[in-house]
Amino acid sequence: MLACLLSWAPVAHAQTDEIQVYDAEITAPGRINLTWHNNFTPSGRARAVIPGGVVPEHALNGVPEFAYGVTEWFEAGTYLPIYTLTRDGRLLFDGVKLRALFVSPRAHERRFFYGVNFELGYNTPHWATSRFAGEIRPIVGVHLGRVDLIANPILDTDFNGFGKLDFAPAARAAYALSERFAVALEHYADFGPLERFLPHSDRSQTLFAVLDYGESGDGIEFGVGRGLTRATDSLVVKLMLMHDF
Image (cartoon, rainbow, N blue to C red; front, side):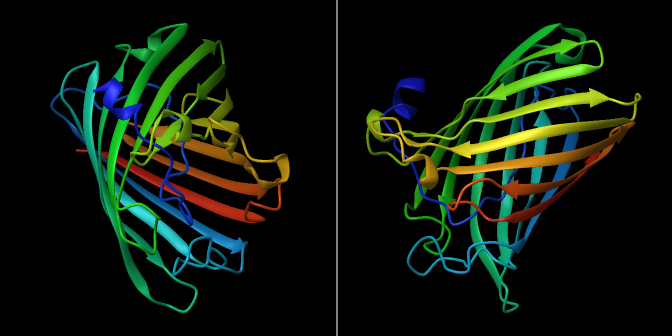
């Protein structure tokens, strides 16, 4: 499976449905989790990134993510439907994704934790240049008292060869204010294909300030992101609502 995925290459997205750093926490076996992702761009690119694509500025992207805990180390999930509310009020269907997440069991109890997530997605033409796409997302992190340091060195792909795999790393540094609240800085980037990274000014880079709340299977994550390059939207707001069933 891994060899097959590594033969794929990047897919160019106008925007993203999920702005999140994975921390190796998964849904308990036999339980279902719903995470509702929503991302709004108050100030951003005023033209579509791909022909016929969504204009990022003033667009709302989102998706309900359903996850099922299969074992204490494996979670299966789906994103359905991925949608966009455009700046002129049109509601668009963007696609659907399936995922398989494998992690070190009871990651919150470990000093060092790790995992890997695999995704396969179907895209509509206004959402991406490739009809099918995938993601390989390694997860590595450490708990240092109240501080969490996490990296997701992500590879995005669309079936075009190893060298065209797209390197889009994400990282998070979080500080627990209490058992319920945490603050964090998150960095999201897209360096382009492995065979030849993009020039620095053409790379996507966004820094988010994030506030997290979680209690008894429910959670909220709110963040405000600032684009650091000309290839990135200037201001993005994200909101995630989580509930276990």
